[in-house]
Image 1 (cartoon, helix red, strand yellow):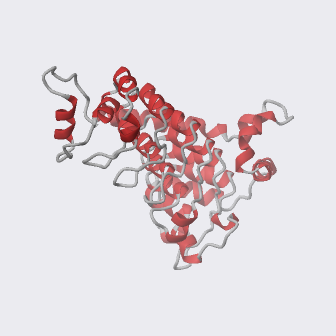
Image 2 (cartoon, helix red, strand yellow; image 1 turned 90 degrees about the horizontal axis):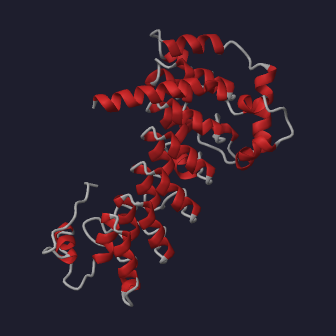
Image 3 (cartoon, rainbow, N blue to C red; image 1 turned 45 degrees about the horizontal axis):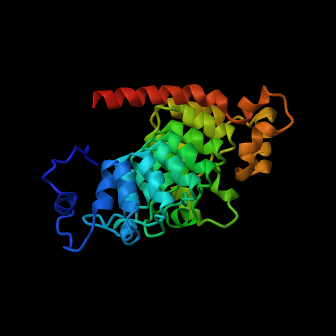
Length: 328
């Protein structure tokens, strides 16, 4: 959303918003939407105090059929979002693309607003009208803070519809495809399954082959052996086969840092220490991983149980991302 500017006094909010909405109806009162978009908290309070304001609170305006809360998220003022929620705005009401306010906040990397929406009860999965979900968007964009936040509030790292159809994909696989190690690490920390065979429902073998993590690493992230190392440490299957029955070592013949690491680790079983880590995390289950630090264990074990030894790779990825953004 473009940066908003103060309106000239002679230009009414109605006229400005009508121009923005292309062909708004004459009877539409869009002052509420404009105030939300512009981050005007005082204006919102004044309009919401009017008797007819409830009628327009969830009214969707052109060009994206956006309700006031969705526009408030785009405007970027957390206080405006709180005001609209307190007034009873529908937290799940989508725009024309099926994007909920949380989806928009995630795609625009607005962490504080994401927290407000999630704590107010927003569905971390977004809307079924949109085949994509907030978690997948955060992974695709390398937004590791968003990934962590969504997982903490119950986002499903193995969504059934996306995995069973491969559309649009599996978050852990996406993290490799887009070479976002920070997101890959946050998914593993948050309890994402390394092997889809551990799901409580059967997955078509063709889909398992298509979503092979080792094959994706050597295809999309071959310069980053840390993907292989972490995948191995969390119990991933380095010997997975593709649809032709070939392992990634058999399919990808060129040498690369990731392949060299995979060749070494594929012949090594997990250490007893690593097996204990995987087993303990599986016994706790995804929903109880947040209580890891409350276990009666020596404090020195918690960083290990949370894969913190891989955090230095994550820091390097963040530095490289900032450099790329600066260059752009």
